[in-house]
Image (cartoon, rainbow, N blue to C red; front, top):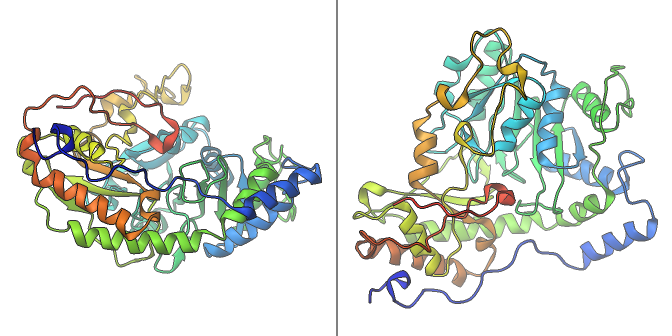
Length: 438
């Protein structure tokens, strides 16, 4: 019998962490208000709560306009389309992200171009962007991942030099700020998700932020079945779809928005406490601090397991041991999109992959991004953000469990536990599957 729970010892924690999402009387009142109004949908557009929420969310993120929509993936599609992405255009994206970041590019008959990530942030490596630019490149789509921002100073500088659009994927960045500028406000547009696991949620939902009236008008028309926008200054006419958010969703978001600042403050304080407790452990590494992030949005807390310092233990066994100590965690949260089974990019379905080429694009063969692959399959450890909404004792338990596992990794050497499971949540949409990496 060992000291670790997975080898027979007593676990650090035996009770669950606070549940997510949280709600209270404000959400109940708002839902009842919509119910009694008998005006539940997204039309008239934007409906009452969608309009109220949009104005507050834009102001929180230092943008002029916000359009609430059906979900986060659709938000990316709308932002790309409204910004002017056309068939055959290329859009530069990080390789290490959710498949839903990239799928809208193909849906618009454009081509994603994958760039590896910076190992210090797991966001797109800005030093590699320019080598990926071609005459067809039209936009950069950076992802603010987990608890870090993509380097928006460098990205906007590159975009200006090459006359490219910037569309921010902010699905992890609600309330976050870079140099005091809100997530989604620094590029031409930003896209947010309000899916169940997000920092701000209505179960589903999304939003587009922009300070460009022309992009805002096009986004409205694309979302509202092609109808002219509310201001209609630019007189764009296009085929649109019904991507509106329901007023039930918007009512929840309007109430939840009031909770976000206090939740953000509590997460930040608990994360700082956690980092002080685990800093210096030889088998883990913390992501370096970034002083340009002036408001932290930690969708998930991410740190690295260092296999080379693991006494023969793998990340899979580290995660299994941490789970058995009572700490929910994940490893294969994302994987390089070009390798994902959720990204079957077939030229028969997406003919843009063969336009003007002797052989169609084969993402699996074309790309090898070592930092993204190492993050996905060897080193990243993801802790759900709601773990850090609990008490200081809850956070102490997390730190104690990490330290305990690190101090007893020798117990895991050569141990094969069929119960060790990496929950591939991928924004909580992907089903849980067994993955054995030993």
